[in-house]
Image (cartoon, rainbow, N blue to C red; front, side):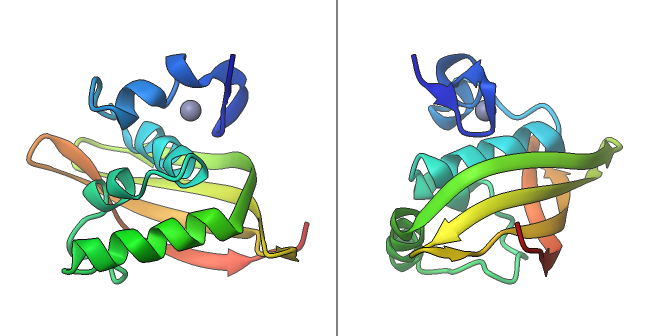
Length: 136
Ligand SMILES: [Zn+2]
């Protein structure tokens, strides 16, 4: 059985998978954040695109092109570990602070981020984040 990239104590099929296949919606920013991390790790660019708010600075109108570049990023990156530091939300906005342990082409590209999420049209979306790198 496969572990979920967001938490090795959980099985993928019982954690982020139902969100990835659209069987379940993220109930809060934390769930969405974890499922987005897992989507990167499982190389699911469409899920990442669909859960990114159009006002996100990295949002690309050309979804096909965006999908291809996400696909490349996912392939070149090892998603080693996710650590949640803090999370909070109300009914229309929320924040998650996390550390993502990652490696790209042999380089440590781990970072800490405080992500902002908003609730719109009955869905949570990733709006933006404040990123700072850290060394493992
Ligand atoms: Zn998960």
